[in-house]
View (cartoon, rainbow, N blue to C red):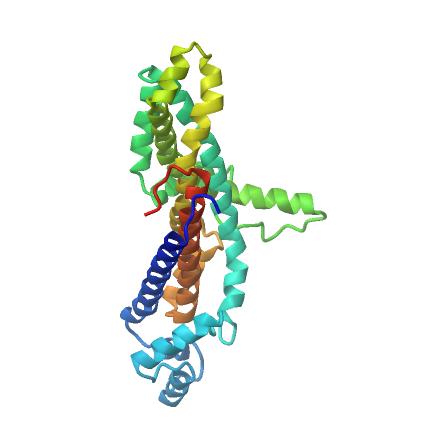
Length: 328
């Protein structure tokens, strides 16, 4: 396999495993730092709110065990891809709750990432080709400003303007609750209609940093000796851009694409709360409010695994794509 060696792969693999282990350990500890007894919360919502019932629930959920015993049990369940049973939706398995929420999060994360990268490549290339122009200064200035704005702020502005004031888009949900569809096209259109504002908010924030990165990559490539030589030979600027500059400028963007998926997930979790979009973000929020440890742990464990795996794959694929990268 060109560009890789065994030592490099082993080093990256153990680094990924260590990162994942730390993330999963923090994932176990954080819900328990919130305090309170989930069994008492669940019992308070039923007619069987008695000390005996609370004690029975505590024992059933394993909360009467020592913290180390709970930790070992937690790791064993993760190894077998068993996230446990939801406390608040007993006896629904956590995996069922995640399966219902995950497609909605993937929809807005993947859509926004692909759209923002496509637009960023175009704007970043144009800004680099017109360095110092009004277009370049304007796009870079706006990008630096937008990049500093939190996801939730953009989401709230879009929600207030286009959903609440103008009533062009729905305020919440992923599909209409009072509409019966006669075909798949109608359902698909309704899904896009509800996802438009959440995706747009993620695109606007994510686009800024990616555009700046693409512009920087293009300018760096144009400063290389072989690019200076190509220009000195009189090659057309369009040919230099398409044949040499874009290909080499896109290589660093590949790693950025893999890493940015993790950032997009973080932004999506917050955005889903603003739009009451039924993805992992809203699921995690409801689980925290209900002290539902297994759901919180299951969602964050899934996110941690996905982010670590994507970064690991990026580390392995980048040297193959660009053999100039040092394997260290």
